[in-house]
Image (cartoon, rainbow, N blue to C red; front, side, top):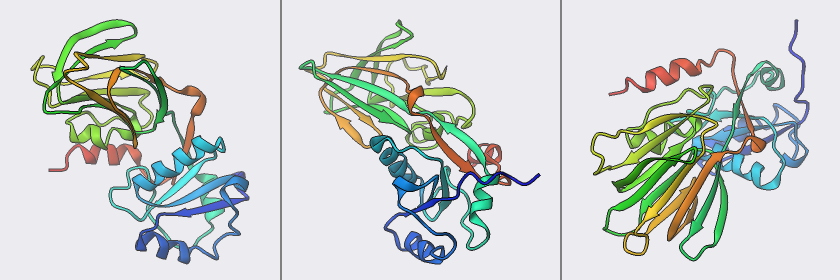
Amino acid sequence: MAATNEFERLALLASPTDRAQEAANGLGGVADWVPLEEADAVVVLGGDGFMLHTLHQMLETGRVIPAYGMNRGTVGFLMNHYREGGNLTAKLARATRIAVAPLHMTAITQDGVHHVHNAINEVSLLRETRQTAKIEVSVNDKVRIPELVCDGVLLATPAGSTAYNLSANGPILPLTSNTLALTPISPFRPRRWKGAILPAHSRVTLRVREPAKRPVAAVADQKEVRDIAEVRLAIDEGSELTLLFDKGHSLDERIVSEQFIA
């Protein structure tokens, strides 16, 4: 049975790089492109960074539609292979849908101001000075580590597990795993703690100890808040996003392969 065509109106967004702009020109006649605010789905040309930019743009405007990425960047973990021509509308109709729920961050500064941001990749706490940070780690209102002495700590979604989280020696999470990665950054104490994989419904609270002496910044994707006292994190189920992947695009194989790259 033929796939139902849900995506009659498509938007096209391309990063400003030469590769992405060249690809956009090549796809110019493939569809009758419409503005993002009028589209049923969006085709994104670029790398993972531009896909994240597009997803954040949709969250900020409240116009959330499925996104189909084609890799004209580098890693392209969130993207499909780039191919010119073909029936793009039919390809999107056959695509596999993967739900991506961002993290909701409430960051409280030392002066008591609350800052609220979403993060599709990760929220990171990072020391602001040469002094190591001291952070209390709680999960579901239970203190798990009274004092983590480190350069920082991050909580990553599956979509962000191959980014900063991987560089900090955190685990790669399948996009459909329904888990989060809590990963220390250059931990000093406790020395043996390498992080934790948590169920996606977990609530994580990170409290900065000695914040005046050891100031810490919080970064939700590209949004930074300095002089943090406490950060509260949980999945924002009301802001779910949808990524579209080709049927032959094996996410499981990419996740496995990424873990064996020397």
